[in-house]
Length: 113
Length: 112
Image 1 (tube, helix red, strand yellow):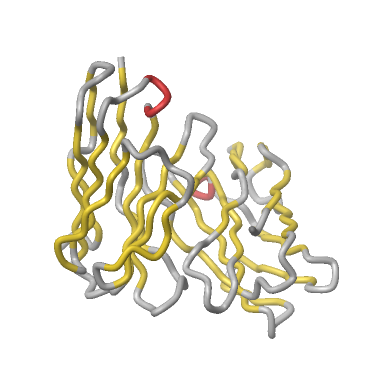
Image 2 (spheres, rainbow over the protein chains, first blue to last red):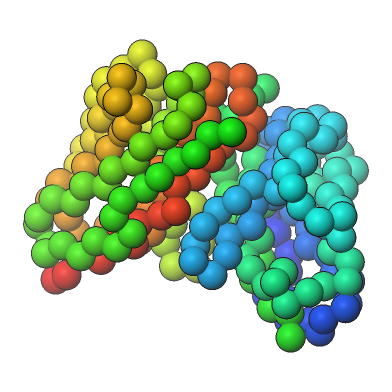
């Protein structure tokens, strides 16, 4: 009955590898997001989709590619992982046609060695 | 874009005392100001929010105040308890803005 669920919760990988993080929400929300939280706890938006349409694409390297197969899912694929990609990645969703309250998942901690 | 500054970065209070966290924002068009609480190993969770047509809002031990002229807003926690220990984030966005800009966070520790 988890509202926003992401998998995996932990991910340890080598530099240069490609990895994906999956996110699903069962709240019926129209908008989904990916946020990155660095080691200093700073939360920065990466992408947002509204009804499968990309509406926010911050200055993120092309190695990061979001995919939204339907409005309940937003996955994040990362190519050629670098040390600086190590962070906690949060998926979130919101109900409205604009921001409003965000419902966050529990995060996926990515460690690049 | 919107720039939100948050102070202090860490705050230690005795149980039962009050805690105050302050934020300033740069974009005068912003009109939605939420506060999120993040417990260890969890995602942030909304605890209270305020919109620009309101100056103050209270929910039990938590209150938020907004000064649009000065472009700052504050979170007040009264009668702090150990379970209030967490990282608190302020944020700001506009009415038709999907993007919520977060402050850098305040780590609050409530000493028993």
